[in-house]
Length: 293
Image 1 (cartoon, rainbow, N blue to C red):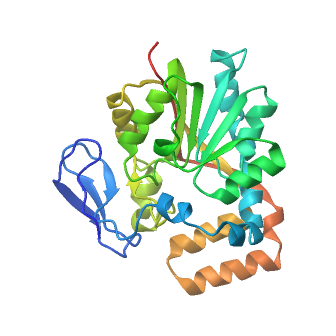
Image 2 (tube, rainbow, N blue to C red):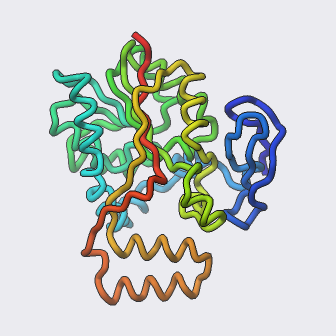
């Protein structure tokens, strides 16, 4: 176990929200000084460590088709992001995605005319993006990528910041690699919602053991501005998903293996992976941040 101080204000004064094993494997606490919610102590190492050490050959031969389909489906959820960035950069420019996975979102912006590059700790994702989309992806994490100062016009980080061991340092590093006037788009689950109040320990994103930080709209903006960014816009967004993924989420929220197995059986029986919907419960936030010119 690893005890840590609050990543936003440095305090070690907190209130326990959920004991270990209640919401997820780690204990979840809330800072009494700035209200940041985080896993403390951490039972497992941050996701980046496990992904850096994964066996490439095994992963390539066992690519999760559901994961690929999910990423491909959710690209269209970023049309508004594309529209927003086109307003600031009508001539496009250099775009970096941190945690680019298999490259579907990068390819979406590449088709739109952006000069794109990714950073991804999983070598399988790097190789897939290169072979399927012709996109260069740096293997590893941002802090070790040795990117020069003021290199990019835009940086994207979609559902990654909640996994990193030091999100404030990540914000600072993104700030460093962006050009003055550059835009950083970061998306992460939100925990000042009616959904969180109603579901508590059963909230889907809270239940993910890989999530170690849990931002409200306020704490996300505080961390971003503390790192030097200016908030341009904050959207509460949804996502596209297949019905079998929705049923999977219901199973996770039930915290009951029998219910989860029955829902999975029902999904497979009726081929719910072939039906997609869009849901916006306003439980995810997409922040558009700017590095001052």
